Structures are given as C-alpha cells and as structure tokens.
Image 1 (cartoon, rainbow, N blue to C red):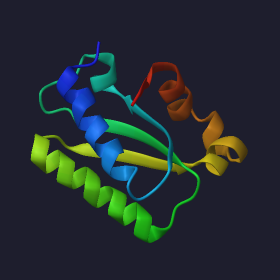
Image 2: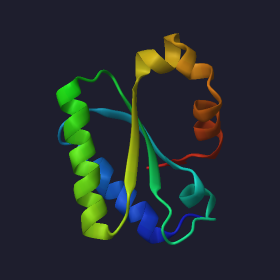
Image 3: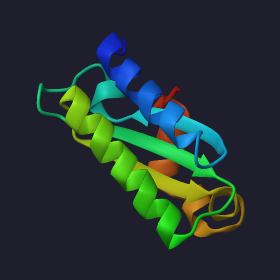
Length: 106
C-alpha cells in the first residue's frame, strides 16, 4: 500500500506539471509504490506526455526538485512521449513493463 504522504507528493507534482504540459499518464513506481521504501528512498514517477522539448524537460525537473524540497523527497521523474512508448523499443523494455504492472496511477 502506498503511503498517503508519498501519494500526496506525487499528486502535487502532477498538479504542477498539468499547468505546463498535458500529462497523459503518471504513475508512482518503485519501492514507494510497493510500500517497501526506506525513509531515504527516492520517489520515482513515470510521466507520459505527447511531446517534449529540452526546455520543457528542464522545467519539469525544476518542478520535481521544488516539490521534493518542500516535502523532503528526492523526486525522480522519468518523462517519455507516447510515441516512444508505442513505436520505439522503450515500449517493450522491462522498466516500462514493470511500471505498467506495478505502477500506481496518480
């Protein structure tokens, strides 16, 4: 079960991301999604968007850092495009398959 504080932090990141980009899918994954995180574990977020730019990725990293600082987390967003998932090798990667299986929708 996901700790409510972890879910709240992820939800805040999504709320702020939604102001700058259309988030198609966002999932909490890794140890915090499984409920076996150590106190210093990072908060892993899978974020699917339609498309990205270097500037957008930088801004998303800044938002994750801001929320992490405010809520005492290291937040690691993995941002991918829909095309990368549907048409590229990333869609068949063990990481993506694991996120689809174990990730907690935000």
